[in-house]
Amino acid sequence: MPRIALATLGLASIAAASIAAAGVLERPEQDVIEIEVALDELKECRETLAQVAQMPAVSDNGSPIFFDSAQDLPGVRCVVADV
Image (tube, rainbow, N blue to C red; front, side):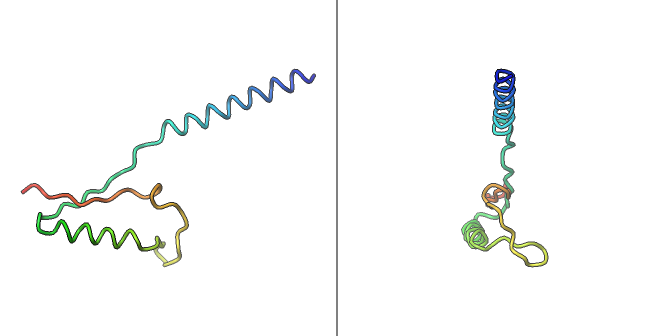
């Protein structure tokens, strides 16, 4: 009887570890939103993004959203538009 319980516990642990490992390996790459601006507006765009990054995340009704924004939100960057 103890062997069956030990074997069951071992197999359950292996299954849980494999599911956790699969979750880590299958994380999709983070989305990146690109804002296309003219070359002379690039510095201002980057400064604005830096200011927005310092603001707390809030929902539509203004209540704070508690999560790690670096992981849960897409990245945003300014790029020079091809003219």
